[in-house]
Length: 445
Image (cartoon, rainbow, N blue to C red; front, side, top):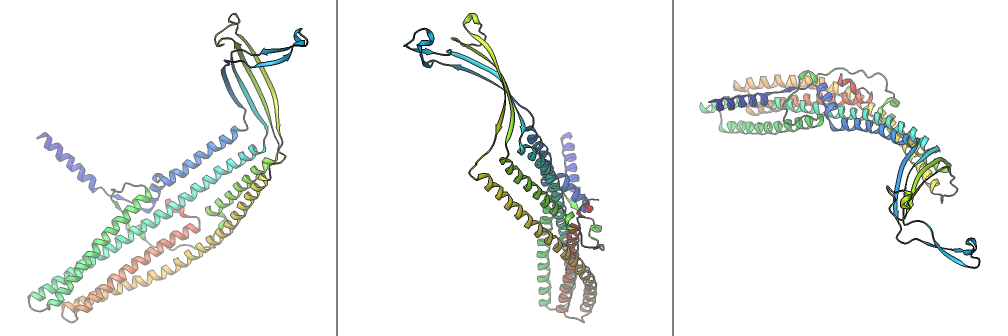
């Protein structure tokens, strides 16, 4: 009995979860995507990584300290030939071996850059790189907002088309019922019943296809926002209302993220060119070392002079100067390659400015056209519904043929779908207009 109750409770919990529906406004969808989508997280990681890049470049300006150690065994010592006069044996040659079978060295060394033009330029470039990633993160956010908004409205349109087909199916089934009753009473032809049956079958097929399209588009939306695919969602109708957009003057393209990114890229390419030119400059560094060496016939570790092992220390301090004189024109070639990249970037900036201006004008024109189309299609849908109702009444009273009724039904469905499509075109144009004005983030508020 206890097991049965447990199973019943589990079944109820499962059914309750299955019936849970998440109401998803456009704002909710966008904010969910910005928090959960991989692209947004990756953009933030790029910013975090840029901090470490700055630390890496900065480390080149700080002292570089390292410890070293070695242990060497010389099974055969090198023999050196010297003049014997130095040892009281003039006119003779002496072969002498220098060194010991074992020696071990341990010490610490330091290298401090005093002047290195590439380090100073690298620090500036690293900071600009961080600013570049910050701008790129903003661009990524805008791309996510645009993508999610488009997908969101696509879901709504498919659902509206599904509602139209569903309503159409109900109306057609009513007509089929009337014709069936007339046929059974000998008042209608079999061909009329067959035609309406074919019509019902076709609408059912459309209904299945549209339901599948809705499910696919919902999955696309959930993927774009990083939501579990099995989550059930509901979109409020208020999200699809048409609101007049203020066009104002053409927005300043120099404030757009796409433009700012290219300008920041231009700055980075300038630093890249300077870092190559830094190869022409001399470098100056300070070096220092302190070592301790042990030598003897045995391994010197932990041994003393009593074991014929002797330890001594030595140290050095120096300055290294490197002056490049001739590199086979390699540096010059690299500088000219950097100049070409700067020129290419300048062309991209000019082209982007034109593209951004074009986007604004196109979005503005599409908004204006969509508003006119919406008004026309709204009236057209209303008129098509009146025609269908009148034709349906006439057919029921035997004053109109079935062909007129089917034509009116098709016209109504087409008008309703055209109205829904015009709404979609407006909302998509609205997104583009907000994008060209740099106001996409207003959708998150």
